[in-house]
Every structure is written in C-alpha cells, then in structure tokens.
Length: 185
Image (cartoon, rainbow, N blue to C red; front, side, top):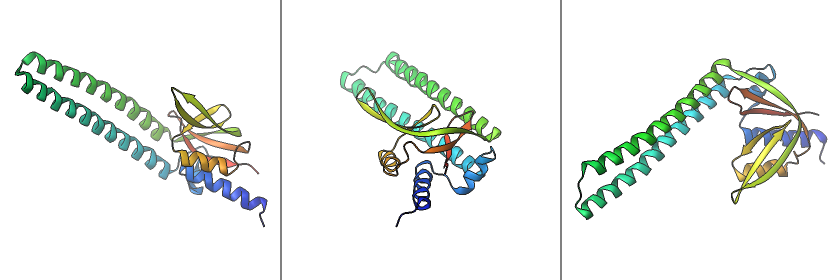
C-alpha cells in the first residue's frame, strides 16, 4: 500500500541521487549557507575538471606534435619556422585554456568564500531541447534551468513523477549551480 509519505520520500530520494546532496546539506541550504561537504564537492569538481582540461590539451597537442615530427621526417624539412609555428599555436591555445581555468577558479573561490545558497521556488519542469542534432535535458524551477548531463539521472527524475511538483531549489552564488532541492508537501 502506497502512502503519500512513501511517494514523497521516493521523490526526495531521487532528487538527492541526481544532485548529490544529503539532508545535512539541505538543512544548511535552508539557512542560506553551503555546507562544508558541498564546499568540498565544489572544490573537488573544479580541480577534477581543470585536470581533465589539461590532460585533454596535452593529448591533443602531443598527438599533433607527433604528427608534426612525422611530417618533418617524411619531407626532410627540419625548419625552425615550422617548429616556431607549432610552438606558437600550442602556447596560444594553452594561454586560452589557462584563462578559462583561472576564470572558473575565481568563480569557484568566490562561491566558496561567500558560501551562500539562495532559494528558488516553483514547479519542477523537466524537458529536452534539440541543439545541433543533440538532445539536451533540463531541470527547471522558477525560470532557472540546469542541464542534466546523465541520461539515467534524467530518466530517474521523469520516472519519479517530479514534473509539476512544487519545490524549493537552493542555488549557489555567484557560480549558479543546484545544491539541493526540497519538495513541498
């Protein structure tokens, strides 16, 4: 026998799974603050993304360097001009990547320093949009929409019957990210 409380508990558990928060995090967010665990997750995610960006950059430009060297051996043209062009392009894109990482690090540090979460109230909307032949899935409350990267998480939200439910979403600032969501009874 299903009760309203069981359904509410299951829906709330689905939100906790998708957005990765605990009841302790939710309690901190209700008071307008980020919990220590949320701050740690924000920091870890930033540094993991930064490492991934540098590794991807190194792989792309490492493979390009091997191709560059193979072409120089094939043609017998060991020119300083060609090497300078390769190094220049690598440094240029490295500086762009470094700038993006520094900008996001600054946003992350401001978010951690301020440690604030603001409430957004409204009905939950779940929808998909097509951009350039790709489907993007979104979770939205009160005009604030956040992309759901994982398909299984979006499916979990849909199957839990969350669409149309009244909720309060707590969003970090200045880097807007969902920190927790609480269903209203």
